[in-house]
Structure formats: C-alpha cells, structure tokens
Image (cartoon, rainbow, N blue to C red):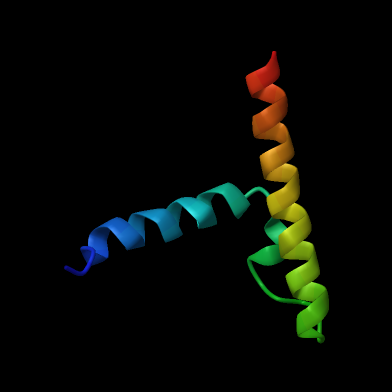
Length: 57
C-alpha cells in the first residue's frame, strides 16, 4: 500500500526548515553541481552534529 503524499511532503518540508539558516542554499550560486552538493552535505553534517551535541548535554 503506498504511503500518503502528505507524510512524505512533511518530511521534505522539515528538511528545508532545517537548512533555512544556511541562506547560501536558498539559491544555488555555484556553477558546478558537485560544489553545491558538497555544501549541502556539509550543512546536513553540521545540523546532525548540533543535534548530537545537544543530546549529550
């Protein structure tokens, strides 16, 4: 049975909310896709690091 579209949409919207503080990703300035992907991966890593750090304290 397929998953409701609303549930998937919520997950995607939450991901964009988490990336919002990294304003550079609102518009893709880099000409090369690899650089943009690398910066998005770095931002995701920083978000995860902050969450883990908050959990430990």
